[in-house]
Length: 85
Image (cartoon, rainbow, N blue to C red; front, top):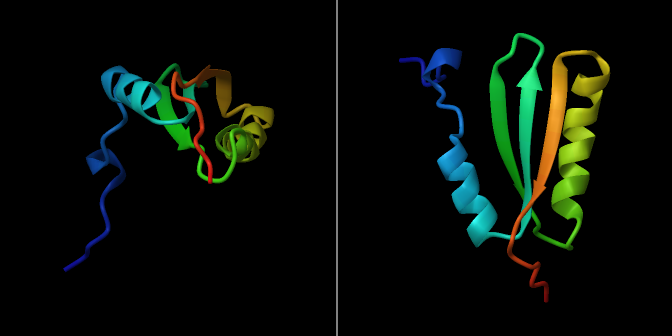
């Protein structure tokens, strides 16, 4: 049996889920409008520093934005402060 999920079986993050993450965890939310008009949402948690979420997000998203795959990217800062060691 094949354990791989089909692309259409993977659920996209909703606004409600992204809002929950932004209100409860330190990190950065990303809302992306793709070239075809569809919307993607991601959350990058701050694990090691107050800025590692945004750094990871930019590193992964910028090349796709530069290639024209993404039309618009919005970064949303979480309401929780990073609490490092």
